[in-house]
Amino acid sequence: MQGGDDDNAGAYSHDGFLGGKLRLRQPRDGFRSGHDAVLLAASADPPQNGHVAELGSGAGVASLCFLARRHDAHITGIEFDSELVALAQANAAANGLDERAHFRRGDIAGAFGDLHIVANSFDEVIANPPFHDVGSVPEIDNAGKARAYIGAAGTLDNWVKCACALTRAGGFISFVHRADALDRLLTVMHKRLGDLRVLPIMPKPHQAATRVIVRGKRDARAPVTLLPPLILQDENAQPSDMAEAVLRHGAALAFGKNGG
Image 1 (tube, rainbow, N blue to C red):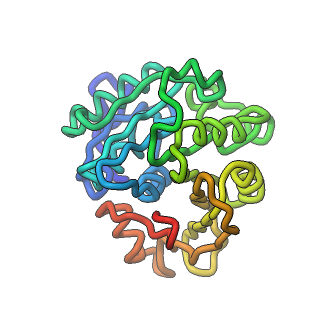
Image 2 (cartoon, helix red, strand yellow):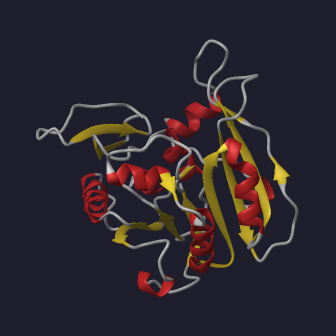
Image 3 (tube, rainbow, N blue to C red):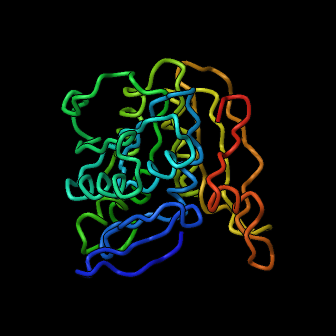
């Protein structure tokens, strides 16, 4: 991500993604997307002319990074905050992607029928769920930011359940999460998905992974596979070739035989 000039009113920043290919506005004080969103976008690889859904789409960063790579595909972002829904749609229009991007308000934790989306209608679903539990981190004053970072009991299970309800038979679901929450993420995903592929994200060689992307397949029974890590920087703090390809040039992440 590349930072930019602040919005004239001071409420938004203008940030560059994919080496400046995308210029997106984000709230200065709310939840702000960075590398996690770009990596999540790189995990999606639906069939030709495929349809993807993103849960918790925020200002649209992951969704639009995906569309910048896949010129044939469409995406629907589902977001609780109506102001972020409008911002994401405006970001899509500003980058010439609004014909293939649709953002709508929805409560992922609510009844599925309230989303008014046809069940099992997407080839893939991607998600960046709240990373923390209530009480595990200091309170956050900004309500929108708190909602994006902190989940209640059962939040992760609700997100995976919603993703499965949206995904067609044999479709794929990818979540990005903290590496130290991998056990919980696998437990929740394994209830409904198989052929789970775990991609650790390491800041530098010989450092512990800080993020993981877990990608699973509906109606599959294959066991869990731990993939070679994606290392973001070398020992001299220079971007690795793969990180450069994904974060600056929009390359897809490889998840092996399960299609990622």
